[in-house]
Length: 373
Image 1 (cartoon, one colour):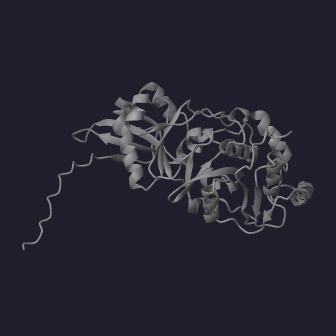
Image 2: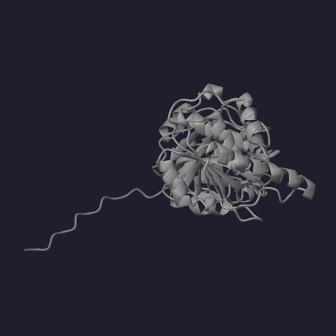
Image 3: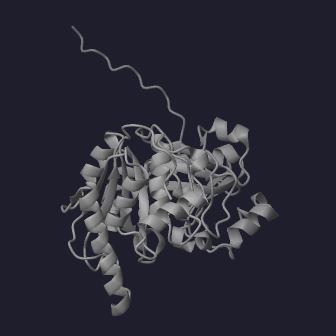
């Protein structure tokens, strides 16, 4: 019997060449870009210093490879797993597909698209879905009215509301409120500045929210939601940058929070919460409020609370209530933000104490009212 013949392979279409320029220099744009970019887009690209987010041009050459038929400006926060299209110009669909191809080659979890100039028909044709508009934007932010996302990895099934903190210090309160809105414990309409400041006032260690105080405040506001604090440090935390006199009274307040936790039955786990445990919590439809430093994503070492609420292969999906408008960072970056496990592991060990702080909120046993004042 003659050996089985291998069926002939179907001819494949040659891949359209994609050319990437990095970094994008707004004062010296490549010649191929100039005919594609109008005044509005040019102004947006030039007036913000995006260098901290590695701006790149993804270009689609014409048939001869000399002229460009399309281009997109893309950026991303460092140590994350996505690319963001600021604008696509020329043959918009070709530009967007080129970005998606590039993101896939890099093994990224998603591509986002700011809605400054995007048309609904182009969004639908390129496989993107509409993000719900933010309830608020961070103080000083001026992001687009619309945004879009295309996932390249499976895993995320539900989307919380995006709420940008309205002060520089209410991140902890906002992450808790968004978690409860996502869980259905709090109506989205009740997620407002009054609720934000009310919960912050109950949780604050002036002005920051440390893990135990935040956990106790969440328990007070929603007593039917199981709460656990994770803190692998016995001493007071987040005080190293204060003068000695200011450390002393803040330490007393943290001690009072620990007594409140004991009195109200809020458990404090003294072991470091692992990233695998974060994934397991999310798998149980719990929410994890995680304290991290912004040094790796934004360039300055400031403690900051984010909400971990979804998982995809290799990355945990967070909501970050703060955006850095000076770098072109918008709510589109901060919403449904995939961060590789290794990066999140590094960001969430805070120096100089070397601790990790988190609050897990379980599924509510019954419906609570809005946060108590």
